[in-house]
Length: 62
Image (cartoon, rainbow, N blue to C red; front, top):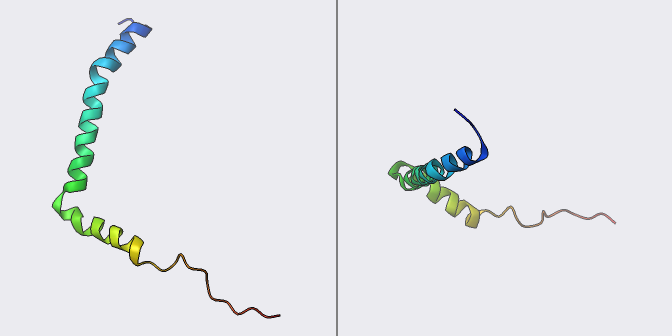
């Protein structure tokens, strides 16, 4: 098989679209899988409930 530029371009145009569609479908299935709901809800709440973004209270000694 001759692997010149036009052959590689044809291959990437032909199968690259299907590869990206399959990858997108896999990500959507993972994101909407029912057993992952608890994990994603916890991650969504943790960013709002976390108080670690406030400055630490330290006593300044003069």
